[in-house]
Length: 114
Image (tube, rainbow, N blue to C red; front, side):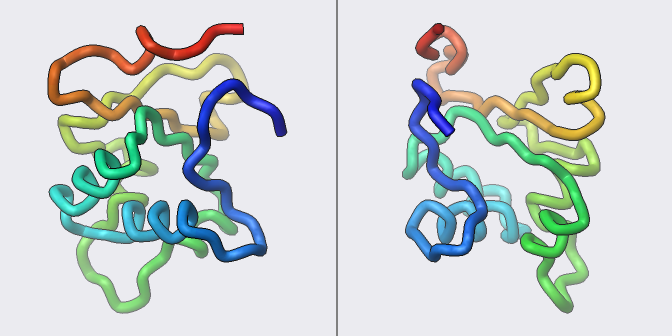
């Protein structure tokens, strides 16, 4: 897949540091830890494609509290993650969130365009 954007992680069969960071972010129940990890990696957007496979990938056995993944899929994002609208069928199949920057600027303003 080619994109002008830098990508931290995609789930694939090869262990890699970006996927490990993504797993830590999406499986934590600690909002501050998730936000710190996102900032450390310079993440501007989170795109989820909720499916049984993805839910299983980010499931934490025996964790009674809602993980970050579960909160995002359920539409309960923390205040520093802004849900972005998606159109058509994509809206039913994916969730997109913008990570709020400390200076209040939108990441979209600095996004490369094609």
